Image (cartoon, rainbow, N blue to C red; front, top):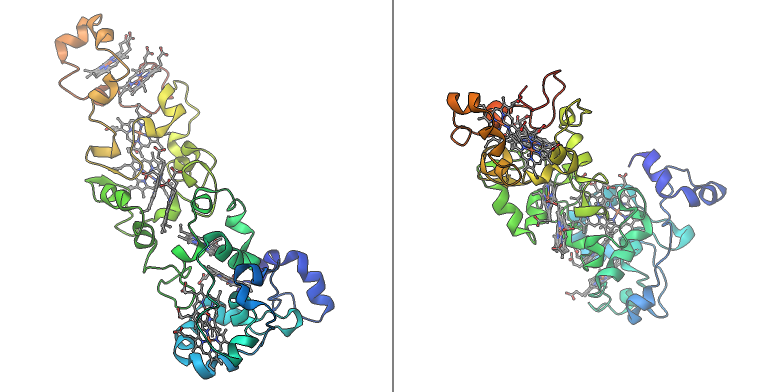
Length: 306
Ligand code: HEC
Ligand code: HEC
Ligand code: HEC
Ligand code: HEC
Ligand code: HEC
Ligand code: HEC
Ligand code: HEC
Ligand code: HEC
Ligand code: HEC
Ligand code: HEC
């Protein structure tokens, strides 16, 4: 755990933590509590055992895989607030220890399950979780995260990598990523999280407030400003490009010249016999001559030809 990140996670409680003699780094207290009885009436009357060793007597195997997770490494029993380690996610277990059963599960309501995690993870990239497309559609934290076992090299993902985690539900994107021209996700040069913050609420859950801003993080040369702008590039890169994949070169939504002809007519060139004589603009792609389709800074780039 990086002390600084955890410090912001529990910023509000760190003063209390220091007062109680915990170090800021060691403070593991959840930021806000969970109404365990509302989550599962079986918790009524139960108290926290606060001793993972008690759990080990019956859950040895599960605890072996759990031992390799970030939680096992960073959480430990902190009796001061009554919710250490296992019970910070599994609720007060005194009754369970006395009479074990399987009926204290976190329930089936995604939002209630997520509340367990949000005790400690409300901030950061999850600032806008509530109201975001995943939260609103009942996708719980545990749909993407498997916390009892580290199955991925980072972030406790449910599958070995980000793509596989997402493809559980977004099969159409896998098909796009297999097309001839695609962003190099399959090649492991980037992943879904390079463009998406799935914890958020931005349009299309992108990392930036607008689609173009997201693209500029890696394709800064397309940002401009240009002396000669091309209106559609300023407006949205997605007018001409499929973000995930396409069977046209350069991720184009349709083939050049048809792409250009959805907005332009050939008319412009009919008045330019010079060019008609040299070449039929329909035959060669428009961008053979209009090489600066994203905008031009050349003094005579008005027609985006240089
Ligand atoms: C009691 C507080 C607490 C609760 C409750 C909690 N976490 Fe965590 N979580 C932490 C701490 C502390 C870390 C380590 C932070 C760090 O390394 O910066 C962490 C790390 C993580 C990570 C990153 C792991 C990695 O290997 O990078 C994920 C993912 C995560 N938690 C998901 C969850 C999910 C999902 C839940 C609910 C099922 C949950 N957490 C509940 C405290 C908590
Ligand atoms: C960060 C939250 C979190 C912590 C900490 C945690 N668990 Fe879990 N545990 C879960 C979730 C969520 C599930 C449900 C299965 C899943 O989504 O992986 C689960 C499932 C289980 C199960 C059911 C069997 C299984 O593996 O699916 C047992 C038993 C269990 N946990 C015991 C423990 C014990 C013992 C500890 C402490 C050593 C512990 N858990 C710590 C969140 C947590
Ligand atoms: C005396 C044995 C025993 C002890 C001690 C024990 N458990 Fe269990 N636990 C069980 C049994 C039996 C089940 C039911 C397994 C099943 O349904 O397959 C279970 C199920 C669970 C489950 C999954 C179902 C549910 O109700 O959520 C979790 C999580 C869990 N235990 C957590 C804990 C934690 C945390 C501790 C320590 C505070 C603990 N257990 C201590 C025997 C025990
Ligand atoms: C739709 C899938 C998905 C859901 C739902 C989801 N996550 Fe994540 N989470 C991810 C992915 C993917 C990453 C890795 C991001 C990266 O590579 O930058 C991640 C990273 C994390 C991390 C570590 C890095 C960070 O951002 O702090 C934590 C902690 C975390 N998630 C907690 C949660 C919690 C808590 C919830 C529920 C409120 C949740 N996640 C819901 C996919 C998901
Ligand atoms: C458990 C199923 C599930 C998983 C796993 C999942 N999603 Fe989703 N996702 C949904 C649902 C449901 C919606 C909302 C309905 C929709 O737009 O399809 C959604 C919406 C989205 C949206 C927004 C769509 C829009 O038009 O606003 C994006 C982007 C997205 N998911 C990306 C991801 C990524 C990236 C991952 C992996 C880190 C992931 N999802 C994992 C179920 C899932
Ligand atoms: C290069 C950036 C980028 C990467 C990488 C990326 N996406 Fe997207 N994604 C976008 C953009 C931009 C949109 C919105 C497209 C639009 O509005 O036309 C989008 C839309 C989506 C949507 C909603 C629309 C749809 O196509 O279903 C989902 C779901 C989605 N992405 C999932 C994923 C998954 C899963 C991955 C990883 C396998 C991924 N994305 C990788 C940029 C990206
Ligand atoms: C995280 C960095 C990143 C982001 C964000 C990003 N790209 Fe890319 N883009 C790449 C990489 C890497 C390549 C592959 C370059 C290569 O192979 O040399 C690429 C290639 C491309 C290509 C050429 C594809 C081909 O077949 O040659 C286009 C077009 C493109 N990106 C458009 C976009 C658009 C539009 C967006 C915003 C929706 C975007 N990119 C966002 C990294 C990014
Ligand atoms: C009017 C249609 C159009 C729009 C809008 C557009 N592009 Fe393109 N883009 C193209 C065409 C056509 C090519 C192929 C150019 C060629 O073959 O020389 C291309 C090629 C690319 C390439 C790969 C070659 C290179 O120049 O690096 C990237 C990356 C790219 N575009 C990014 C973007 C980004 C980012 C945006 C949004 C700011 C955007 N494009 C908006 C038409 C467009
Ligand atoms: C979504 C619609 C759209 C698409 C697709 C599109 N353009 Fe444009 N284009 C425009 C608009 C709008 C202008 C600005 C027109 C104006 O200022 O009169 C423009 C301006 C131009 C100009 C400068 C015209 C002038 O009179 O100064 C050229 C050249 C051009 N586009 C070429 C292309 C090429 C080549 C493609 C295909 C790669 C293309 N355009 C695709 C909408 C589009
Ligand atoms: C052989 C090279 C060439 C090809 C191919 C070509 N253009 Fe042009 N186009 C030009 C030149 C050069 C000009 C600028 C003439 C001028 O400066 O007066 C121009 C001008 C334009 C203009 C501005 C018209 C005006 O009235 O000034 C538009 C729009 C345009 N082209 C669109 C296209 C489209 C769409 C295609 C593909 C169907 C295309 N061009 C193919 C060379 C070409």
